[in-house]
Image (cartoon, rainbow, N blue to C red; front, side, top):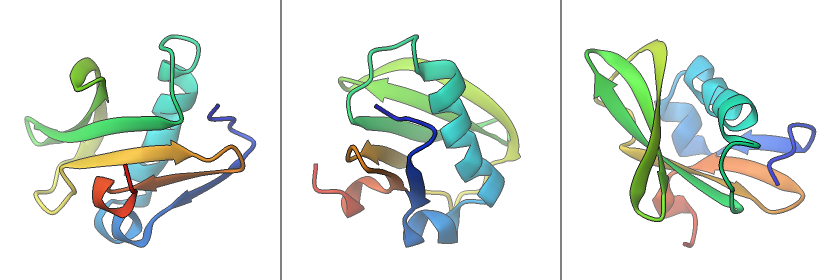
Length: 102
């Protein structure tokens, strides 16, 4: 699950609302901070948080906050409040929860 060699995409709403580096950081967190540390299903959820003007990612599992990952990126109120990352087995996509039938 979440093989870094699989095809990876971001939905239009994510690409149009988050900077490229903030999107890339989601993949970095999955590959380097979540894989092998937490049991992951094929759907990973993050809330995007304003942490003193910087973007932080709250990793949510089972409706509970599991971990927070800070970033150096400025937070913007236009960012989506949450995002999901789905692994179909062939492709992986970052999208807003409303774009994925969950």
